[in-house]
Length: 265
Length: 289
Image (tube, rainbow over all chains, first blue to last red):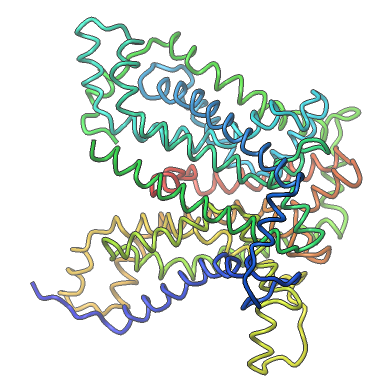
């Protein structure tokens, strides 16, 4: 077969594509060196090297309090969302669920409805139920938001898993619960772990609902960041942004490794 | 996607309807508490307080100031959709014909921003665009401007930052669509004498339309309800629907009117989703990692 040399148009498309890649990455990457600069005003290139802004973050009770609160919420959300998500996924794929179509709609609902709509709706209800600023309120809100991503991830691994294995277990005398716990669960566990990872990131980074359901005592890290960005663009934020980007990178690499493991058991 | 649909349909159904409902119960409780009940109460507030009336909805469409906000929201969202489409297409096309390490790097370049906090990315734009920021420094250094220029609190800045934040949502569905086009089709067209422009127009473009429309739908949906970036980059002159809703709630405590604004927003969203007749393909965003 004749191999065609890349045409000029192909090269042009590639050049634009690389420029777009740079555009995607550049703003966030520029923040990294700036977070080590000594000036009160962020400048590029930075005029020196200091860890001062990182020290400010780690010694500020407000920042640390907000971070710990967010970590707690995100861990609980990851647990709640994967538990609930696994059960509904199994019901959708392996069960004869009545009103299946309706359940599917409810699963995707929270991503189709804009966050701002959900956020002020929750603000209204949580205020009346005294859930504003509570752990339960945050976890319930973030679980709903993470649910579509969690369910899709677990569904994908349920579909990849050969249901004959489950049937074999059933015909060898296992009851459905045993078949699920002993055969299905170990097979889909990489999917469940990456679903938990997604839920954690979604909760930990979630800015809109957090903005509305935080109160003076309990606020999440994104809410604290929002306030700081709005009132003063202090270089401490650049340090926080750098650490968050590093964390996301870590999570992506972790997720990639998990997926490789689930594809090649 | 099951390899044996029939086996899947017959043998795959392990649990009875009652057991399935039991499995779905925690989900149902959660979705009622954190989704259906809040939205229902908000819409109730907009329609039935103190008794059934449409006054709040009439106010949305009667007063010029609110119509302007809605017009601006639709305009900015349309611009953002077009810009992201134009930027995403070449990148998705490159990704579709790449394999191995380069593909991994390109995917990382798309996924890292997607999963990095919106606040981090908005903050980055704030730093770049501020009066003593990087963009002003560069333009000043190149003698394009003679004094620091105000980029923040302009519609251009809002469109730029939103396009950046939403770009991954356009790239991923496009990439999935372009990648699914068999290379043989392109080669067949070339062998038959089609130039690259004609291959693009008659083969690639039509076959990538599903991905294009789902990317556009996703970006537009996210843009019309976008809160963080317009709230931080824009000023009162660039107020969008979400910022207006926030102002009604936190500053004026006008729940019925905020509920009506959300009702209108939900109506837009519903019309778009039904018109495109496709559920947003989430698996594209979770499956790529």
